[in-house]
Image (cartoon, rainbow, N blue to C red; front, side, top):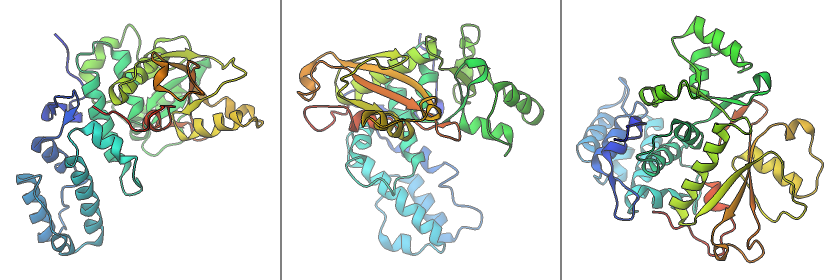
Length: 342
């Protein structure tokens, strides 16, 4: 019997579409409306409270522009306009996967990162349904939760950024893991365990706390697990079967394609691609490299053919990793444009 995880994703409130994707339900929309970001504050006007109550009762209810204009707080008017546009975008597509993929065909500046993260978590909860591997699940958290990096003792350790910031209560940057643990121990009741064979069984009861540290050091289970999640994500969202292998370095004098899995990696590897000199400090911030191969080379551009695609993940100067899973949909060298989202 499979064990449940990521209850906060709302997966139990959604339905599985005939395509294998996630279908939006009224219950899922109502759960999102109950989030603190959308619940009217105590000082909200009567019109905003009435709008929120009406949407909780009927989450698909059309909302006239005049109802938004009637809200007293300009910030509330903006927030509700953004949420309703996001809701209507979801409802215009059969699945969450299709809605997510379609977002990148338009200007995303009005879509809050929180909304994108919610969609990614829900999609991955669907993809990983029945998974019994905590390493795979913890690695998948990188897709929708920013991480903080420690290189303590030559190991590459990732901790959830929100957990770190909550534990530190506004303290300094995340340095050595031992320093962080000491700070957590004195300031907050938050446990941070490195995920390993001894602690993996604890993941299930704590999956929504996101408080396990992932060891992404080359040759260890964390980096291999992230590669497997990447392969599952690509297959589910595009229909392309791929193999993803961890690398330490790229030994390929004629590499033809790369994808940065975040903004930092895109910038660093882009400079290497153009033959520019890249400072050792920047190269040292590459957290993971992968070789991706398509099982069916006919799916990719002719100039790529059977050659590998290299993937890179990096942290920024503030030691943060903010993965952008959409890059795997937008930037892989598919011969035919358009993602076949479930």
